[in-house]
Image (cartoon, rainbow, N blue to C red):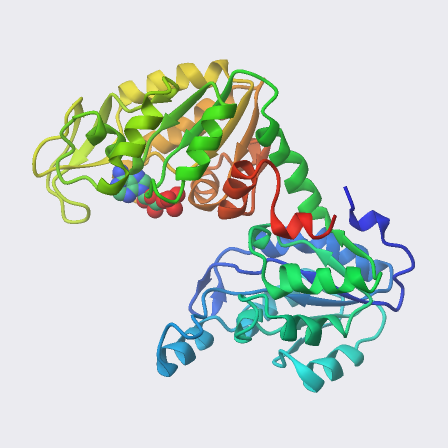
Amino acid sequence: MNTIENLKNFKGKKVLVRVDFNVPLKGDVVRDNNRIVAALPTINYLVKGGARVVLMSHLGKVDWGKVDDATLAEQMKKNNMEIVYPEVKKQLAPTAVYFTKETKGDGLTKAIDALKDGEVLLVQNTRYEKGESKNDPKISADWAKNFDMFVMDAFGSAHRAHASTYGVPELLKKENKPVALGYLMEKEVKNLNVCVTGKDHPYIAILGGFKVSDKIKVIDSLLKKCDKILIGGAMSYTFLKALGKNIGTSPCEDDQLEYAKKCYASGKIMLPVDTIEANGFDNYTIVKTVEGNIDDGFQGLDVGPKTVELYAKEIAKAKTIFWNGPMGVFENKDFTKGTIAICKAITDNKKCFSVIGGGDSAAAAKQFGFDTKFSHVSTGGGASLEMIENDGHLPGIDVIG
Ligand code: AMP
């Protein structure tokens, strides 16, 4: 692997680090600083060695060309990297950390040139530039010309070939300038590759969450690698309906019924045998456990105790586990049991290598106090799914070479 340890003589050099500071915000404060903390080893290593470190990241969505000007301005205001700046400064103290609103041209160059050895500059949201998400060669060239080296440490964005994740390192490589993966990327690649290769069997995947269509391609790929796929969450109702069960008012993706049937025919898919149902998502008055069919006028919101028992037995036998997607609406205290039980079953199995593939399952494991007991908790939901789907390849990894 081409890692940061391969970078030599970076004292006084201008190093662009593509970080993933796409952190959840609550108004004007950072709600969860995980992703900032996860990038510290790379930043501190470069700072200690006297590099002039420039941090670039996207933050939230800026839908160029898809929304009207007022909405675009609103999106930019909401996703202003300046909100993240105090937390970055705090985490890197006593290192000098500056912020620039400039996202291209002479203004950006000036801010970078003002850095002294061992200082850090955080740049405004990369998505303030229209060309970022399109991997526009113009913006890539405008950014790349400022740097001697590039470090990729944004795993959560490594599945996107954007200007800051792909265009810039591609250009620098052409100029024979060093590019490398940071410590966070190194850890992600090493740990997720265990699930990509899946050498230790039984290999169990646990998939939950809301959408089947989001996870479709990974189901196909996981069926080739895994011994069993345990399905929970809202996506289980699409499978149950495909098998002719009544699912009441539960969410279902009707255009995926044939696909679900095809997957089920593999014999590797396990589905909930009981469900915790309620007569509404928010304003329900009845919550009960049912086996088999879900009642008319009710929707499933968590897996039931028999399913938990069944799944826990499989989990106890596993040597490799990949988990993406909660078993139920874990944000609501009435429907946390299935997700907590899965966390417990996985972490009780001390002989398995367990990976949480980011997103909501990582948030759930943290909320219930299990996150430190997993072998690896990925910082990238979409990226970890795509990495498994593409047999270990992601644009942001492959470009580093
Ligand atoms: P995803 O982003 O696809 O992993 O979906 C995560 C979301 O799925 C969480 O916010 C959960 O509340 C939601 N979810 C899980 N189970 C259910 C369910 N039975 N009904 C509705 N939403 C669910």
